[in-house]
Image 1 (cartoon, helix red, strand yellow):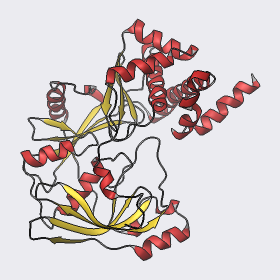
Image 2 (image 1 turned 45 degrees about the vertical axis):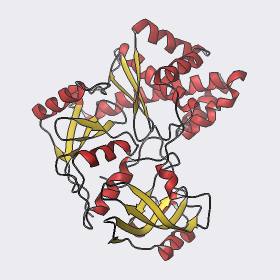
Image 3 (image 1 turned 90 degrees about the vertical axis):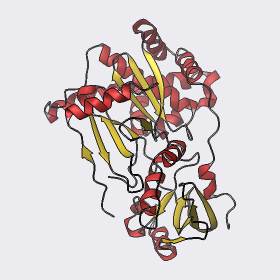
Length: 171
Length: 208
């Protein structure tokens, strides 16, 4: 083959082995606890007995089927970085907090305007919270290698992060 | 090829599927009232069908895919193992007509440690083609090799054509055993530096 770096048979090789689900969740909560807004989420998990589960999904995804049950899904062959996992966990836990506070997605038959208004508000709040956690963790020297802000941009939240940081500078 | 046709289950059938799913060990929980279940036939299986379970009460929506014979539901987890397992159970029947649908199904549901393999049937209809610069677009069109299917003396099916993987456009032959296992041979790099944009959520590459 012309380019030894690209080999289609690599596609069939298994990804690197992962730690157990419980260890990944435990470590992620431990890291979240190191920053004020993350600590709030960890307290929420303990106080409300939130169950966190990991599932296999083609793309990184979070899912909240019940108010006390959250899922983080990722491709087991290509799981992404620990920082992505931690930020995804922060996002879905924030969503669980919204549910616990009675801020729920409208029923499916609700008018489109209600869906737009409520769902977008929930999404905005969740993204803002992830930005806060990422910025707080990024200031801690022990987590420099995690590159939380770069990961947040990789997740598609570049514009939200810029807006968040601009607002922080102005305050 | 036209988009696959999905059949939507009614509420009673949906509940039955969700009950069966929830009885499984480590089952993912789906809220009954906001979940839709659809299925479609796969031309290389007789007993198993592809099920898509979607929860609409999340943003973005959350979906899981399963292979099922209506008794067991095998979750597709991005690795080849669930597909290979059903290939044995059904068992799979591959021929020169259904081999391309099998490859599309396989590469749509299996994701490698270094990205996805894309089978390129028509460069003009490639998703993300517009994200490439004009020179790259023209290079792909010029170097594209259409798919050809043939059977070898060992009853394997050989599919030669153009694939995208790891930022490269590669001409190769994919050898598929009668059991549906596959390996690439005779790889030839046509073009490198072809990177498609990544989505923070998901991409429906081949299926509608």
